[in-house]
Image 1 (tube, rainbow, N blue to C red):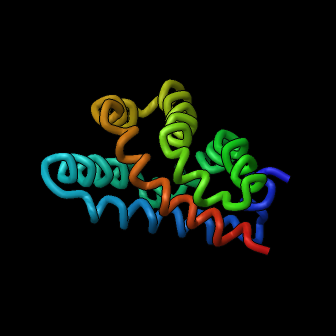
Image 2 (image 1 turned 45 degrees about the vertical axis):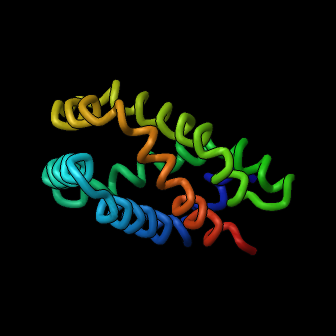
Length: 145
């Protein structure tokens, strides 16, 4: 069973989406300096696209994101600690997640989404790498037996 199968079970899906949205908010709040201001501004612009846009996008992105990182997570299970492995492989994990968002943005018809993403894409890997420990914890919270 892959991560998508277990984490997007109808009984868990809404909770996983909520926890991911809360994680994003927490990550953004922790950012400081000009890059933090830029990220929070971009996030506010995306929230303004329409009510519920961020949870909707998170819900849409989770299945391909879970599929993208499933091999890394599975490797971690074999090593005995999938969270630690995902964190130790944060660069690879970030690349896998960015491949999903890069593909998604290419097909976006919303210029504000494309434009915002393109402006922030250069620094995105660093920010995602910083979020991997929290994301791994969200995953673990819902994969524990």
